[in-house]
Structure formats: C-alpha cells, structure tokens
Image (cartoon, rainbow, N blue to C red):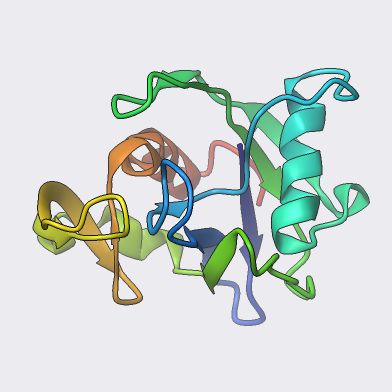
Length: 166
C-alpha cells in the first residue's frame, strides 16, 4: 500500500484515500492504493508504486518515498499489509481506474485525528448487505474503518508532529 500525502495550495496537509468499487473482498471500503505482489515486482515498494499507478494514475517518478511503515494484519482477510508513506506533488492529475476505484477522497490529515468524529458507524456494501457496525470515521460520506483506520491511527499523529518533511 502507498499512503500518498501532499500539501495543497493553502499549505494544508492532505492524504489520498480511495473508495473501492463493490467488487472484491474489500469492496466499498475506503483504502489506500495497493494490492498483491506480482511476479515482475522487485520488492514490496515496487508493488505499492505499481498499484498506485494502476489504481489512481500516480506515476512512480512523482513519489518521494518517506518511510516504510510497520506491517499490519488485516483481520477480515488475514492479509499482511506493507505500507509506504510517499510525498506527491499537489497538482497530480488523479486518474482513478473505474473497475477498482469508485471515488477519490483527499481529506485534510488533521481532520482524521479529531476524536470527536470517531464512533460506531454502519457500513454496508455488496459484501456486507446487512449493516455491519464498526468503529470508524465519516470521510466524505463514506466510513473509514478497519485496517486503513488502524494504519492511519499510527500514521496521522506522526505526520502532524512533523516526523517527516511533507
């Protein structure tokens, strides 16, 4: 996975999140660009960069990799997720791949740290037709929860503390 961050024209720190289409095991969920290792990938970073280019049209040469983040285990699918933090220009022309990406969100990072926004939410998708009650945050009318929320719980305070030059 790649966590692309940038400062907009006003200097606000933002992160790119995507809403997956309803297909697949993580259908309808907010996530970061990412996917499975393919035979041509030389390492996990190459996988993250390839997936970001395929899913949202982010050219690898526009990513300055700032850190490899701690791997996480996805509870719902038993995937081990390796994420990287990357700084990108604020003028990237995002090109979401319509078979995989239903929507793109670029929330201000500080809004993801507001404890008042967190609580129990109802999540539904093609996979979860009966509402699933999850701990999450509303982002652009979608529920941010699960492994992406866990990853951001660690990443956001560190970004706001200035651990990396973004």
